[in-house]
Image 1 (cartoon, one colour):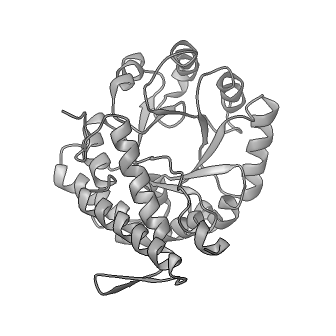
Image 2: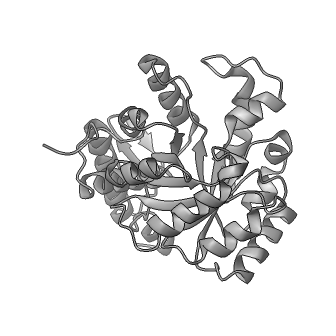
Image 3: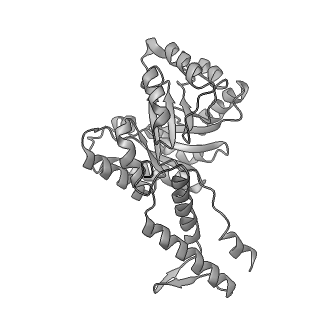
Length: 306
């Protein structure tokens, strides 16, 4: 088998971020409750959800709960305040003393701004942390390609409410006015092999609308969606969790490509359809997400396995 064909069936490493739950850092009971939730990532928010007079309280809470606390399988992310705000640099200094996985920089609008943010992070001792950014303005969307090109960046997270407001859109369930911007950020993320996460759905009582929003995000190509309330976790996890028929299809694709490679062919035929080698990445990703979901004790329909 030649080197190119071998690379097509190598193991695929993928960290599910189906759900990224925002938790206001100034509310202790919300932090405590998030320990037992089925969120792939928890974003402890020091920025948008925290009133100015409670910024110090939020920082104190993170020191209290994130110094050694166990949050299960959930990735721990802290969204700091903007570095040009009165709180941003102090947030960074606190962040490096916490047991967390990543920092989320808000309102990223240029490659230069990202480089400056990384400089301050590294100077504070946070060079070990993963880096995520919010894209939530027209300028951020237009510069998403340059932002995504940064080697240190891992995840782009959409801030769709702020973006829609600045675009002067009337928000509709199908998000027609946002689709161009969403696609531009997805293209930028995929061009540089970054994760890309959709913004939250704010109608907490309309289950159908929430499910539609989640499935639209999945079909647009997002890896997952931010969540603002635990009640949305089941719907969102389910939308981004591969189902059994997809797993069966993925396994058959990998087997067909492997057999084609053994026969010195780069393409395979499965169910009278031509299968290109590029489909191996889709198949590997689907299987990786599915297996990880089961490893953390969730069933195909999400939630704890019975």
